[in-house]
Length: 205
Ligand SMILES: [Zn+2]
Image 1 (cartoon, rainbow, N blue to C red):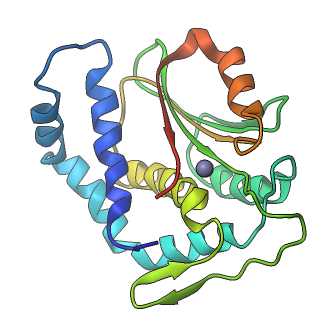
Image 2: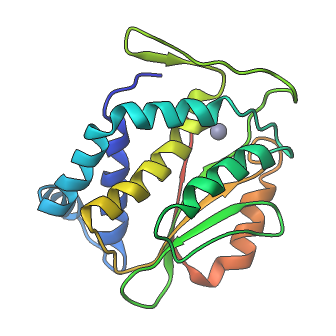
């Protein structure tokens, strides 16, 4: 998995999601480009660039906690601890074991959801150790899907660091059992379907 500044991609997605809320038509890309040039979004992307090394360390740490489908709790608890150190409206688990963080928007209405699954396809007990060589990081599951877990965590911190407020609530959901049955996402959607404006699931590299 190439380490570059690919985490800033999530800002493109986030900008699109924010702007598309309640709007249709073709000039979205131009709007996204304009948003990317705003001082606050630049500051958020600068946060990602400045913190590249700590983001990489955190990404590797999460990857090395194996989380086979149905056995995601250790990884989820580690991520929960990180989320609880941020300024979020709530951090909780639902009945399926999904970890859910809510970042409040300025207006009421349906939320924009970002999803990254917690689980791996590896057997329980597998020891995972990441290595970094020539600008690449290697480990089982580093792309699918801790790359996206880390993207969500870093995005929350970048939004806070840049003082970005969104109109809609942002819900960050770390789901269980994506690899075998979609149990986690099914439960989340069932519980929240009236409160979802857009649902963006991030997976693989
Ligand atoms: Zn995946």
